[in-house]
Image (cartoon, rainbow, N blue to C red; front, side, top):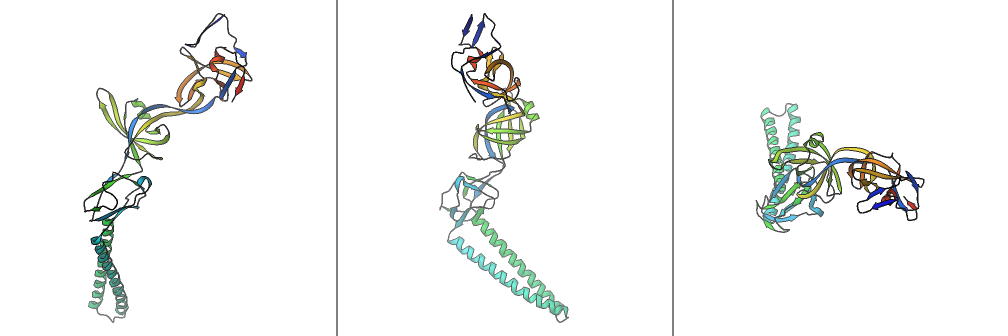
Length: 343
């Protein structure tokens, strides 16, 4: 006679159960497959830029921001420009000076070439030849200064992204009149970025795994390297502050974002079954193997977990079908329903 206690999923048998049975209960099955498993550590940290730059207006004028979606800029993109009467007058003066310097160099270059030809024929005195050389050199210096003044003016009134990044913490509005020295915004490098977090896990895992696989906010997978680890944060609680340089960051995660992270250590591939295929009796685990309508309980040794999958350290070979729905009924031989196997 059989006595079942279903609340604790325990079974007392006064009769020996058959090792195999055929039945008519509706079930679902899954194959034993390969999956990747890790030791994991989960916590919360902050995505931080490697480079941060405060943008300050370098000239008086009206500010024009070139914002786009998510305020992301490539290196060299214009972030803002300044305009106004004083800026326009300065621009005109510098352009006139630059054009005049270009014309002067052109005139003296032609004069220099004619003098060079005369000098080769000994038709030009040494003093005049030296004077031509000096005049051309001075004109080129003036041209170089005019170009430098023009380039400097452009950087003062038009700021370009020094590296790929995002604009945050705006302190002004579009069209505001700003004075030189006014803080405009903060510019953060978008790549590379680092994850700064507290770590209270096994120190040996950090030492063995300088390169890591990382899961952010339960969905975004990336990789990175530990580039800094502080001493113990607290003599009471222990723990260390760690910096992890991330190789890539996609989606809507930008610097200064708080994230949930999972560090994945010591990866290895191994046979796996869904968690729903496992039956536990005290400290032992079993699966119900299905083959050609015949079902058999088989003990297994389990290891790490990866989502809904559980690693099999010992159990049926790859490709074996195990019951995932109806597994307790088959394991305990509560077989009063009609069978219908579903893959």
